[in-house]
Amino acid sequence: MRLHRYVAVALGAAAAMAIAAPLWAQDARPKDDGISAKAQELIAVLEADASTRDKARACQQLAAIGSEEAVPALAELLSDPKLNSYARDGLEAIAAPSAGDALLKAMERLRGVLQIGVINSIGVRRDPQAVDALTALARTGDTDTAIAALAALGRIATAKASVLLLQVLDTATPELRAVAASACLTCADRQLAEERGKGALRLYDAVRRAEVPKYLRLAGTYRAMVARQSGGTSLLTELLVSGDRDAVATALRAVRAMPGPKVSEALASELASASPELQVLLVQALAERKDERAQAAIEDIARTGEREARLAALKALGPVDVDALTFEPLFDGRTFDGWEGDTAKSFRIEDGAIVGGNLNTTTPRNEFLCTERTFANFVLRLECKVVNANGGVQFRSARVPESAEVSGYQADMDSSGRYWGCLYDEARRGMLAESDAATVERIVRKDDWNAYEIRCEGSHIQLFVNGVRTVDYTEADASIPQSGVIAVQVHAGPPSETWYRNMEIAELP
Image (cartoon, rainbow, N blue to C red; front, side, top):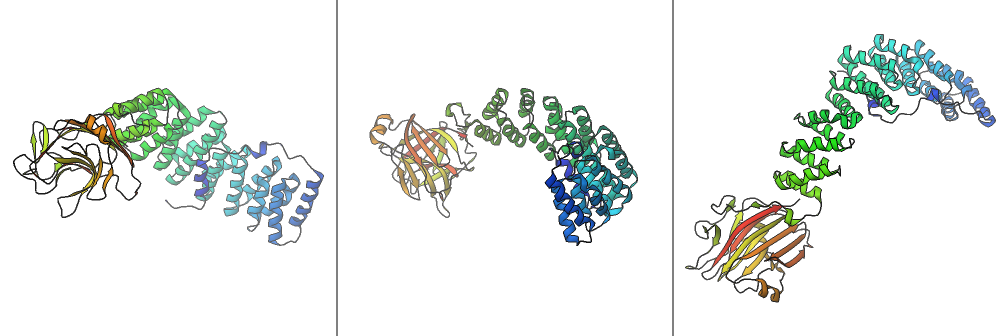
């Protein structure tokens, strides 16, 4: 399709939702002796043998004054290629019908670029008297002229103009159909603003079904949904399940302009069966609706959705209620699936627990069993036991290259009880935050199972032992990674064992 210099004018009009009232219909500016005198002075410049520059400036000033007295002089300049656009600016600003008559007469006698400029000005004035003449040009004129005429008819937006636009949309060449579609949208927008909703919907529906470029069909579909409000839910659902990325994006954009519980119900109904990617988008759209049905649907996905959708739902719900989180097993109690490390000598599975080390041999070096996945924000819960041991739970950590070590945060523990509940930075900065010794002495069951909970939200880290918070730490160093693997440790030293079981995690946004 070749690109005409006037296509931009026609297509740009489709996006205009707020259009000025018709100039021809406005009350004429009250005459003022001072303005009239100034107008006469400027008209004299137009009629004299003045320079093109001076005449152009006079046209601009007359546009600001809007004096009907200037119509004849401005009309004379419409055939001047150098002053045509300046004269048209002046006539567009004059509310009197005589300005419209002058443009209409000029449109009939001019040709080419000058005629097209006049057509554009008639469209700006939204003059209904020009509809028949514009219709003739749209049907019989050359392509450039027809494009300008269609755009002008879209701006005029009368019922008669709509008829011609729909005919062109249905029968013309692909190029003119695209222009007609854009003009239909402009026309419908005007009609909707003037509470002529039936006519507007007819135009929107015609565009969305027409054989025109996709972006125009989607523009018509968007407007059709928004104009119908809750009555557009069936069309909304159709787009959501289409599988077309652009169509889905259009539907979700329309949702923001379609209030009411019926729309929330339609979104919620699609949520459970949608793909994980679409679930994330639907959650975000529902979060903006602020009604009970939307809230309930988001809460449901926060409990049952796929990982990305669940994180999006948690983010939408705001501050996290830890007791309401849905936890998933991090260790299945039977295999090392999802973990990597020395499972031949250093770690084994016994009684549903990961056991590091043994009580018969020494441990020559620190060993770590790491998750294959990384985690950023989460709540991790597990039960731990140490027997003659020093151990810990690593998080937001990483393997040290060419070493058995792991570098990163560690929730510490040991048989003496001194380090339970402390936050240590393994192979990096050392102790970051110590727990209160008296509290630890009171709550920790030595050589027995203890519950550990680790909460990470951005730079905020909290540790809990047997339900008591032992560390509340905020990372001040922005260079420290906020994601990494989770790992369990057995410390180098004499015969010892570290036990870890009932490991479960709830990721946070």
